[in-house]
Length: 305
Image 1 (cartoon, rainbow, N blue to C red):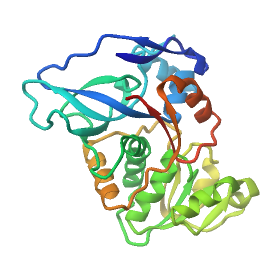
Image 2 (image 1 turned 30 degrees about the vertical axis):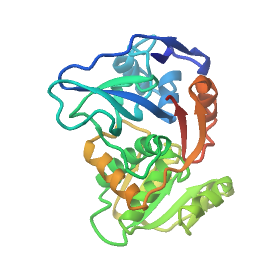
Image 3 (image 1 turned 90 degrees about the horizontal axis):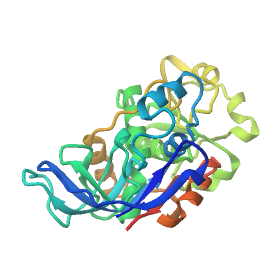
Image 4 (image 1 turned 60 degrees about the horizontal axis):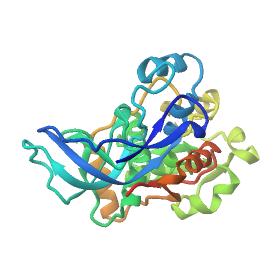
């Protein structure tokens, strides 16, 4: 099978396409033919070891000191079940599935084996593989942080989302909408058409100083890109408000229930994949360069199959 490996930490050029043996599923595993994955901010940070302070040491300890111990990066996938182990009962050959491997990585390849009880489920019936791959990373992250912040505690909860046009940000907007939240989005003026398409009419443009001048109070302030001033974010909280950020020690945990929620919302046409660009597998370096610019709107998909 073809696979993209990360030979060492560094710029996008450290990525290389190689040929490896196709994995064989164990009794409780599913072999998935990957059709699409996504390149997100986490992929870029891991490949380039682009983290600050103590987190750089933590990442080296967890992922590898001089290079990733698991050289095939990528955390999300959409594909088709090609084979199942003898004890697998949840999935059948030919079914379309999607899921997330987390720190096990491995989705930048034509095939992957994954335990049937892991973070994998049937893909939305009305979704293409590109769409299924696009909704996972941002969707699961947004669900985790917003639920931890108490998004379901009350109706018309006031939520401010900083970085509302990225993968996690667009997902957070839509998850908050599913809870009938009163949403204020923060983005650059480049994102106005994109954010309005998502149905948000309260928008602050950080490149015009509107966020720094803002004084309204919110039940939840969520920094979906990890670039906002923490002091400023906390100043916008109600007395019992909650601030969450993707930049910090708290790491979003993934669960199959989150995938099921995304599948349900997508099938009900209440969730959009928000795909910015689609790259073929042989343009993975270009895909990483594009994401690294920090200006993508929504998600960047990498076609595998």
